Length: 64
Image (cartoon, rainbow, N blue to C red; front, side):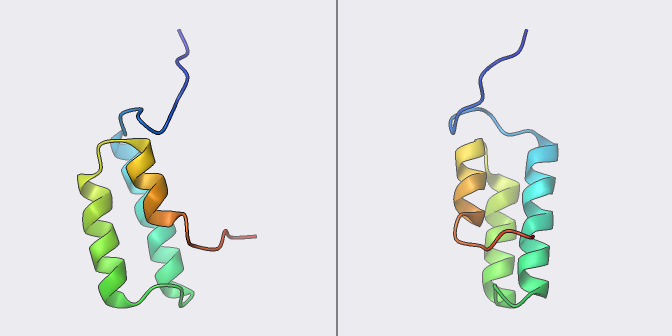
């Protein structure tokens, strides 16, 4: 049974890993300082919901 995902849906390890990859790319592209990257990575690994993960990358430019 498929469930609808919302910002309150529990995050999986793969969701946290995907967010960390986005943060890594953002730092490599100059969007994040090393300190902010470290802080966001820490928050991503502690995130429990998809909404928390989305908030960590909401202000970053998407890869084209």
